[in-house]
Length: 373
Image 1 (cartoon, rainbow, N blue to C red):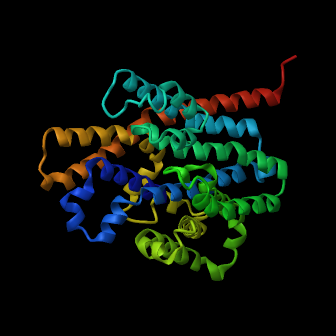
Image 2 (cartoon, helix red, strand yellow):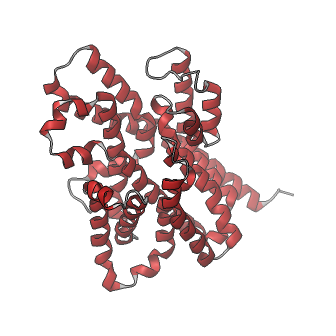
Image 3 (tube, rainbow, N blue to C red):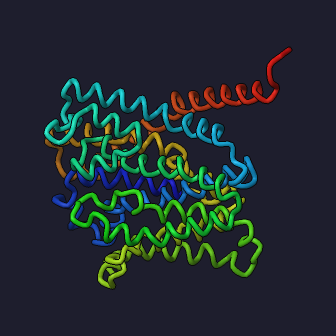
């Protein structure tokens, strides 16, 4: 469900930007806090997703191998590649064709960078650094900065687990990431508009998610705290997202701590959800199953939603649709983003993912058995 909120906030942010919602009646009709939460929470949604991702990937490692020090790197990387690469490669192919044919909204400015350079950056997971140098990239290219940060972390994280062997040294190293991130957000590349897209700036969210998974079993045995975890967690999440102006005025945002506080809140919620799969699928929250479904297809929605956003904005402007219909247009565009992501997941990503994993499992079994003599 949290993943669903994360991807929904990103979609609404991009609808806001491309429909120029601050210049419409929605800005005046909706209360200021409601407008901010609905249409300016995309960055916080990304931070929540980073935290969830750190938790889920560490949980999968612990379930499969028991300890980070027991991880089998080839298996881990094959599984990550099976999930991440097919949709990414398909997206890059489509974006390349749209750029070559000069489709409005999808053409890379050659004075800043080239298609070849963007492709290399996307495939080697440093498109965030390319954007820090060249500025915003168009359409779906831009959203790949988060994929770059996440995948670099997951190239390094299992290596650290294997090298450090035990949980305690790994926890200490992850804690260093938590401490350094606020400084990286506020002091690294401060003259760069996109400076907060450097890898260290988001490492606290990923690290806190990993830490939560590593210590969740022990914390879950402390019954006194079990009810407090989610209460504190939700309180922190609401505090950061709803009362962001208060955080800004208090100087907390200037210190880069708003993101860390948000991640801590998500971790509190995750501790309550730990070993309760029904809460992750939305079964524990009647009426919110649709949000959990958005979370299930979040990767595909994230990669593909800009196709819908740009097309919807262009059609809206071309046909001069009256502002009174704007809420319905936004709703339809959001539903279309969901349906496109679901289609990509069910018809392409998941079938390919399963096929690649089956092939990897067969290869591993064959390797274990050794050659037939």
